[in-house]
Amino acid sequence: MAKRNTYRQRSVSWFTTLFLLVILLADTRQGRLMAQELNWSEPMDLRTRERFGSYFGADTNYIYTISEEGKRSKKQQFLAKYSARDLHFISKVPLLPEQNKRGRIDRNLEVTARFFIHGRFFLFLQRYNSQDHKNTLYAQEFGSDGLSRGKQIFLYELDARSRSHQGSYYIVPSADSMQWLIVANPDFDRYAGEKFGFRIFNDTFGLVHTLSAELPYKDKNFGVERIQLDKQDNIYLLAHIDIERKDRERDQADYYYDLISISPREDNKVLEFDLKLRDEAITDIDFKLDGQDHLLCAGFYKDALGRRAGVEGIFFLTLNGLTHQVLTKSIKPFNADFVSAI
Image (cartoon, rainbow, N blue to C red; front, side, top):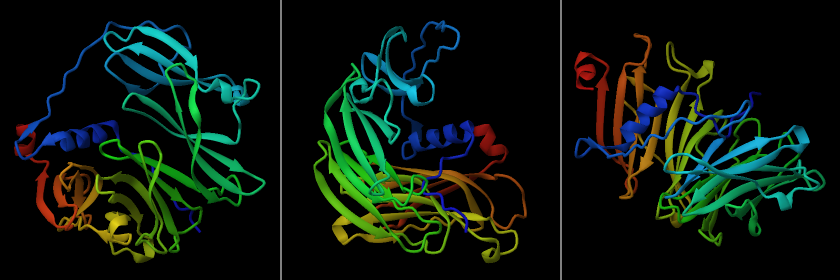
């Protein structure tokens, strides 16, 4: 049986991602974009084989990046600091050196996610234990010196029959960055009604809610595209569901998107939103919360019956997060009028 993808990395082009970001940042009610200020630094000269590193976070004064150096078991992650004003290099320190054994990273400890929130650095680490067949998730705070702040905090534990079948975790900060959502994906080949685990923690990792929910995709292959948590602890999940050939109509797309909500304050009720666009099929979609119980969705569409090839336009939806009603729907084809308006 085909292996199910628990979390699908978005495979859209940089242009698609940028375009959806612009749409979601737009103040559609006022018809204007949020003002953004850009400052350009002087060109930087890097030595041969030197890398700038992956962006980690920024505050008023500094920009932080993460890089990995070394070979195989001796690989070490480094935290670098640059001036936010001109990108001038300031320092680079090894990350969590006191937790490495003899200069080597524990092979059973994997970095699941990194966050820089409210001036605090966080690593989320998972450890596979081959003796008791468990995959355990921890949180670790550290400082700009690379050293840990306090002990690792236990968050979740999954049964894991082997290293290659240990399940996975997805970590989501809430919209106001005051809570953490942990999603535990058990390992299985095809979704057969197993319950996903969810835990909500406050900003000091005190447990607020723990719940499990069965997603409405039984006997289907699907991937989780995005998960969001609002101030009322409602969970919103965007999924990409594959349609097998035997279940597809002629010229029908081989996948579709679904958006659901899970409410821990209403007995873990799972409800679906209506994302249908008449005769159009969604090719790409993303969403964000507006902080007022609304979900803003934007994406691209094509002809659902395959009568015309290629992406045909963009769409925008405003959804009520409480009633699940579609408040506004706008569909704009890529025609001469659209191009001239850009």
